[in-house]
Image 1 (cartoon, one colour):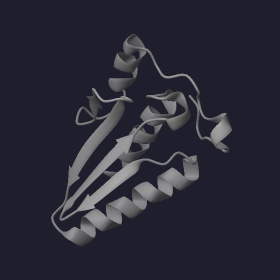
Image 2 (spheres, one colour; image 1 turned 135 degrees about the horizontal axis):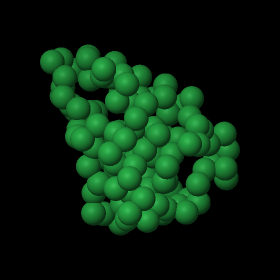
Image 3 (cartoon, one colour; image 1 turned 45 degrees about the vertical axis):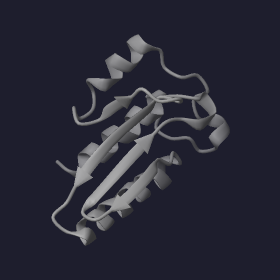
Image 4 (cartoon, helix red, strand yellow; image 1 turned 30 degrees about the vertical axis):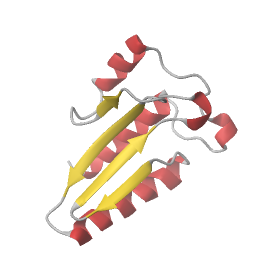
Length: 109
């Protein structure tokens, strides 16, 4: 598996096919959703007991994003954080999106 995108040009440039998406989806938490959007995205909503707990979580996600140089869209709300992944230059989901999601899953174990 690819571990990071040191330069965005090194990120995967081909989106995964539907069969591949299903294979990767079983490797991450079942709460991640494949969104039928254009481009297709991998999305998960997280809920917390306090606003600051959500904010701390968002910072941890940001640290993972920096380490991997693969940055999700995040929406920080009151006690909620939404994380949205897709690979821009691939125009859809790649192995890197699933690797990143798996790393985020480890924050909550």
